[in-house]
Length: 393
Image (cartoon, rainbow, N blue to C red; front, top):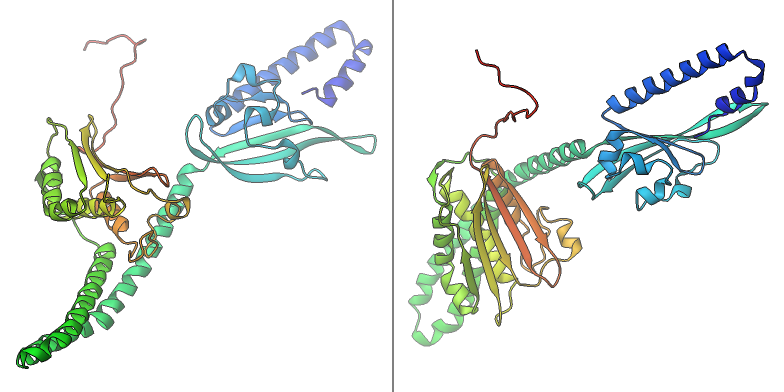
């Protein structure tokens, strides 16, 4: 960027002595070098742009955020370096500053906030536009913390609601169940020809009560805080046991299950009951998304130095974007009779074990869900410095 001050200085160089020119040039170089070192030391990204949006300076932090090469970026327009930014739409009349959030996917998926401010200088009663400065900061962590805070507030609200639901619905359901049992005894005392119509109505009522009870229990399970009772557990065993409990349903739907379980999988301190419940929910979601003709569920376990991963993949209908956007929201479900609590329960169980869940799904191409369990407490590991020498003491 050609500064107006520099242009004025050049126009008056003929009035200065050679020694004064040399002193002034040395001073400008020192100040330029000092400012560049300051900009490079910042964790925030700094870009200096000319009035047309061409980059005249970019620090290392900005290059890291946008995946730029520091040497080749200088001289290029910002909207060609950062695809998706329209330079003209960012310029505001009257020299107003602009602050916006954006999401980048390369070289890493980050959320960034940038502040674009004009650099102007008064000149002969007018304002000369010299360029712009753009400050960029990484807000990925703050957005994650805000999302976790919002989720915590939602769960707290659900906890209060659950207490009311358990009291207002649980007790009447138990009472209805008892009275239906009494009614069933009375029906069995009737003549055989009179029982069948009444038994049909009775079976319907009992089925609906069981369904309401199941929904209530699932709801309470989703938000009730629990502490895992950990014991050394083989995840491969949990996978096989869970599939065994669903074998009848899988066979009736003609669904194939492919197991790719790592043979050398180490055991982990897990609450086997909770993890089995998480796996059950995932398998149930998987086979309900499959057609009866060529449905396949693939289960894979693998491990690294730091974690053990369990992946459950189906070749079913997948999930549309609107469902993916509210995946862990209670009562948002892609199934007609779904409560939207299954994945919420799974994520709570996995996070209580210090792990995380990852969901990858596309409509028409199936769903892939991975659970990651840490093998132990994650500690800092100091890497060897190849340039340093070993000091013996």
